[in-house]
Length: 149
Image (cartoon, rainbow, N blue to C red):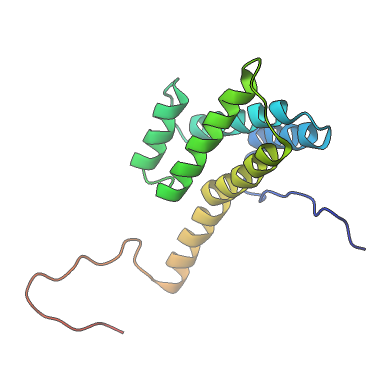
């Protein structure tokens, strides 16, 4: 059976509290409540920061701490900043949130959650299993060239 559009899914590693907020965001979208959708996406970011032990009350600062701690990379930092801004837009009277903005916010938030709670953990397990280093080796400074295979 084909279902269109495909249901949105976040990985099982995402904590239940965030899964509930995420589910509410998707229900808002399905009800064409686009401002509510982006506000719930913003709550998802706040919850992620809190559950990762980042306690700053200002979301922008909290997201910066997530990056400093290596929990998100530059791309995810840019996405989360955009999600924070569109979430603010949804929270203020008079600002319009389009269907496309809400849908994009859901897609980026889905990727954000899956990165933080599923892919990072899976990659760490992969590295342990195959014996790869957790960080790239430091460049050699002894003048020896060549590439290891």
